[in-house]
Amino acid sequence: MLIKASRVALARRGRRRAALTLQMVWRAAVGRRKLRRRRASAHATISNAFRRLAALRAARRELGNRRVQRAAARQLWAVNHAAACRIGRSWVRAARQRRAAARVQGALVIQSNIRGFLTRERCPLLAGGKTAFEYPRRLEECAIPFEVGMAKLNAKGKADLAFVITALKTDRSLKLRVLGCTQHTEAIPLGMQRAKTVLDFLTSKGVLRQQLRAERCPPNTVGGLVEYGTCAARFVVVQSILLPKRLTFAPNSAELPPNAPPMLEKVVRTLQAHPTLRLVLEGHADAWELQQHELSSQRASTIKRWLRDNGARCTVDLMPCGGRCPVATNLTAQGRRHNRRIELQIRMPQ
Image (cartoon, rainbow, N blue to C red; front, side):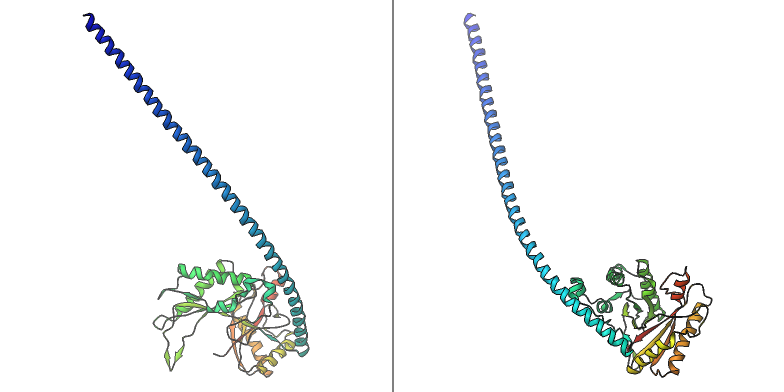
């Protein structure tokens, strides 16, 4: 029994020693694993620090290069600005001399002799890079597409009209004729509906009503046959004869105003110098007048009769607009006087 007890005691001691040995080995392995993790974390921290330092040095170099480029660009801009100012001053002097010569000769200024392009005296260097756009020419190259048989704007048409809105807001003196086009298989009134749709969209985006005229594009014929046509709306820049003063009328009257003959004499001379032009007399009325459409038509007829009686032999068309296109408010007497007017537009022969 004694031997057996001693053996059991020795076995217990051996198991304890083995357990202690395993525990020590496990602790040593865990310590080594933690040490490796600490070393890897330290290595990653040092690597990230070096990367940030390298990125900071690269950013400093890039910043220095940009400062050098910005200084060079500023110096180049100063040189170009000085040159532009010199050219602009000479251009202003030349423009003043031309205007003085025109006043002496009594000639009128026709905005354009080229169909579809508004010629303006500008210095591109003074206005900046964006005036490289020829707004009127680009406007006339723009076509707003419609679906066949429809007069509703689609997403592409609304996106294309963004440039038109920008151009008209940039230059409030710019006026456009919105021409609604149709295919040969579509109903003719659909062209006018498309033009009015485009006009309503533009006015809803802040374009002035006086800058727009809605018209139906007449179909082109070749040898007596109607061309295929297109489902779109186009734009044509309105070309006007600039008078020294606005040609206005008395309230509810179509009689020729006293200051009209001197200005109309210049118009007659201009039309005699350009017999191939087609003149359109656009009559307007204020919002407080009665029978605005008929009154604006009578005013345009009065001007046409005077031009015919004094030697104008070109084609003269009438376009009564009533009170749809005011240039001033109708809440004041002065604004209503400006709205009772006649505008003279030039149409080049087709």
